[in-house]
Length: 391
Figure 1: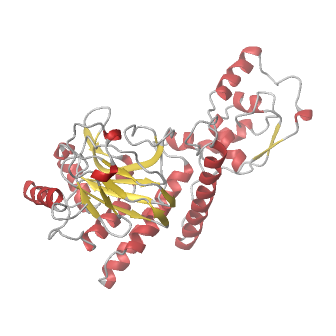
Figure 2: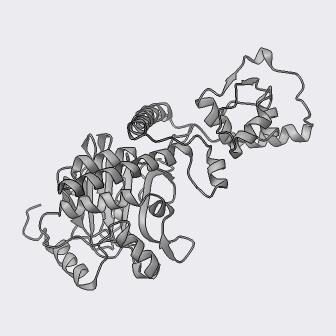
Figure 3: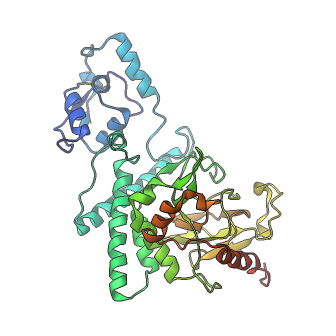
């Protein structure tokens, strides 16, 4: 798609969209287009080109079949669609610059992972009797859903699976297991997050990172994230897993207001700025490496990227859940494989989200809401747990 011009010849197939949907009507308007330029001029979007090409909804024809003149398009119209094409910065899923020497390798790795993920989502949906979404990101956005179909499908199926697991575990009286949590997490549809500048490793432009629960919005004010309300059962499953598998060393439930879910990136050395109190972290999936480096004696004055690993604790968070203070420096060791980390934490000023949101987070999402007493006990544990251990 990045190499398309307004004159690139294409041929659309039958309308694959859901009848009655906005995308069905739009596709009907441009499916007769002979070129990329005509399609964009008739209502297609660049995102449609990417989405529909990947699903075989249209074919790219040889340039020998390109028309010399575009139907009902002036020079101004042609320049307008060329400007749209110029905004394409690279293939979807490429986290580094398209000009990076490792771009091909990074993209191949990403596409292999994503193909496996989409196949898993489809297989699980079929098993659960669920119908998957086919709308484009633009159409979903028009309906008030800021997700593309792949993200929505992953989250939707993960939420339905979580409902089933919770129901089964409640009926049997059994605990939610690591395998249960892993199964749901592997389905979760991750957004590309370019806002976490303090964690971006190397030359990456974004990472797979989502937060559910209470947050302080970057635009100001407090609330709960949209995926929290839309997929509460995933939150509840993760909180139930933490409740059923209490981290070693604490005698009461771990209290928190939020959960950060991350996939396939190793955060560089950083300190969290919007957390209060300790965090609990665990990594799920089939991977090697990926330990957490944690500077428990961090003076918070030295620049994070200047800290030496010989002064840090190396925590195997694949093997056991770790409790740490996110305001102290921490980083992730290199790893191979699929690694999904889950961080349970408390957002600063979390009670400002309001009584109605707190009630939802506790009842529908299973959060054990912090009290000053519970938070105090966790702080004492988090700051004293390594004092008797050798480095």
